[in-house]
Image (tube, rainbow, N blue to C red; front, side):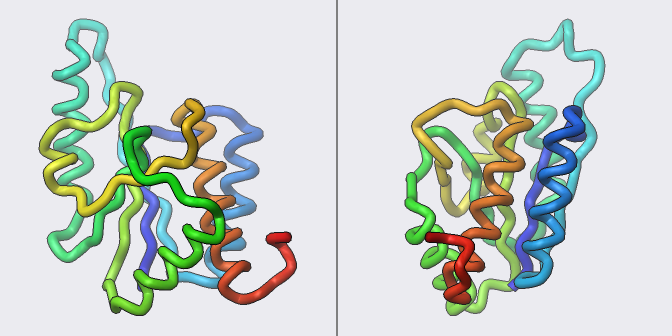
Length: 156
């Protein structure tokens, strides 16, 4: 199973880029993994939030294959513990999904069309994190899930 992490815009903070790089490398020891960065919208000052979401939605949908299992990282999604997330990944592998795509949207959420295309929504926490920070948190949790499945000591 291939895992893709789909993001809008580059990670701007150096400390986050470093952490993301560390966990991306670690995750690739366990999974076929792709970090796909879509271009950030430009000249959005005169656009409404809905127009921005619509434009971002078109970029997201163009990057998703019809056979992809799409999981939106969304505050209204299902919350899981780290162990539950590891079991979720394991079930996804056992169901022989070709690829699973985890998506972080823009600052105003997802367009309706993206919600309609998604197979599931997942929340990382009831707390709110910046879109930049969520990238690192998610990758750490994906790495943690893999070490749980392999009974490695990273997760205590």
